[in-house]
Length: 501
Image (cartoon, rainbow, N blue to C red; front, side, top):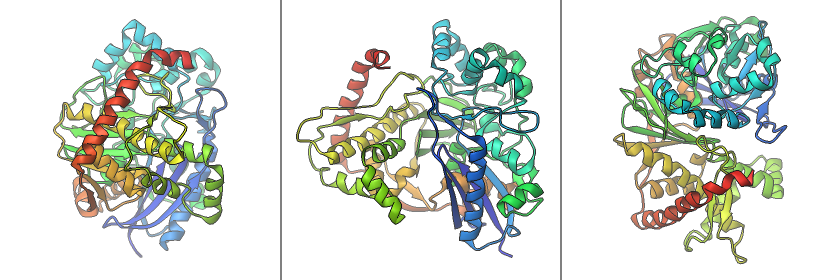
């Protein structure tokens, strides 16, 4: 028997499962993929049973790829995309499709709260402004537009809590996700005042109990074991929001370590030993009690490349899929051909808006007749990096940042990684993992069953820096000049965004 751990990370369109040994080495990876739906403008949903089927495929794929059996798995950890809304009834069955964190149907709810002054009260009490896909906003929207579905609901879950329910038959959430709307930023526990602030006092009974991230929340049922290949009775820990799992997976768990996640969302996060409340970021619970994760985020990162390639480069994407290759390989090569030219095109990566401005939209600016697809791709790469820089600059204004560790889809491109280092003006470090969120919660699983004495010990044993990217001073100055134009365009366009709906 080879003792190992299983980590699952359920993203917005891709689910990954990773089998790790106790030294953190990834022995096998499985994947389940299904796109999200946009049945109406601003709506972004997925079928909940389809998400579970993706998870089953990912687990079976990881076990097969690693060459281990379900009996070798000591414990399971689950991460998932944060916010959104997963409603289930008393039997644990879905009430409606899941609402994902890219959804902005509740934008008018948030604007009403902004006009009433509620956002300031929420910031002081909960550590964050609610945005359109936060649970508070979505539940308020449900009260107005789908009261019958809300009435049929027994539990309002997060993505990874839905998967835990399917694995164990038990309902729970963890501290990191519980703090998405309804916890007191100082006590780190549910707050009656937070529910009442949003006019949701009666909703408390639908929120799941909180179980510590590295505590066992249930065991794999016989039914789930039959579907996944795991063994009945395998412990499943409570897990974490995927951004916290990613921070653990790359070893960012101490104050001053900046974790940047370039995925569907732009995630930029710093752990601190005390809460620092600011409208520029969300202050939420971290994996360990007494620590807070400060996250400056927006739905505006590597998902832009996926959109560009899947919508505007269909022949290349189809051919890559047919050959079993990444559909994004050509992008970096094309960008290289125009990288030494003066930047002539600017891109705003706001395909799904911003938490503070859900009416924000994406756009290319400065296009000329001689520009090619390569110029657009370069602008897209730089626009994504600039969006991260805006968040990182906000965090650096308050927190001393000692290093940057980057994870997410962007780490598969050396060009993009170097661009991050150049734009931020800081070295960017890469850890020994391709799947940081899944590995992070796998480490939590190991803590939960005593394979490690603490989260810190797990990270010390499993995480190593394998590559660093040093900033080029000349390139930093050039990108900073382009960044100033990028931000000036945002300021000029902001008043016009509502008219572009």
